[in-house]
Image (cartoon, rainbow, N blue to C red; front, side):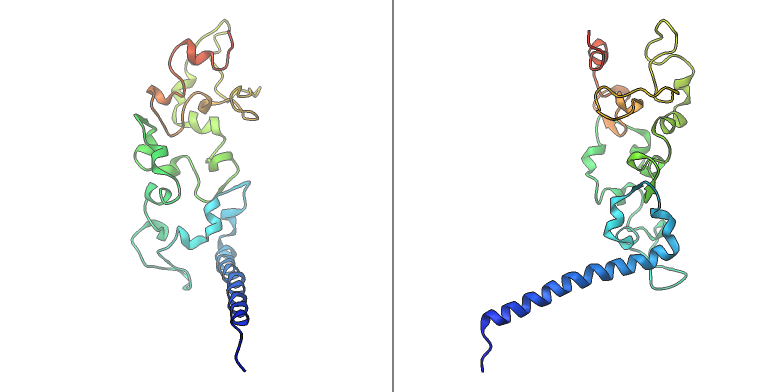
Length: 206
């Protein structure tokens, strides 16, 4: 008795669907083995989406089956690439290029500001956003910023006890990136807006 083509096709699709269920499960099991020892890397509020691809996506040069792990490559922590080259595999490089580039970005030091796995802060930042900026730019605190005003307090920086809301980004706290680009800009000092009153009028309607 000959097998009908439709029956063969159905059997083939059954195998494909079965493999589709098994392969992700195998990948999850492999990552589960990693997380048995490295669980802390993902136990925070914001988790890097890259973790969904599996640990070996970024740590391709590691011999995961051997404990302690054997080093197959020459990169730190057996990463698939060094510095920003690894980040560029997922994040478009053009988003970090411009006339003015933030110092850490210019030297490929993404991890100067961001953690690679998980963070308690938005954008996988290493600390509270305004505090992170001011940690590298403490001189900003020495004098009123942008404008002194009647109180001599200067423009808000985002580190004040009373939280200011960003007028241009609904639901976001006002801090340095409200006026400055964090990665690159076409304007001096990583400004988002052109210098002068036009910049002020973005938030202050006159």
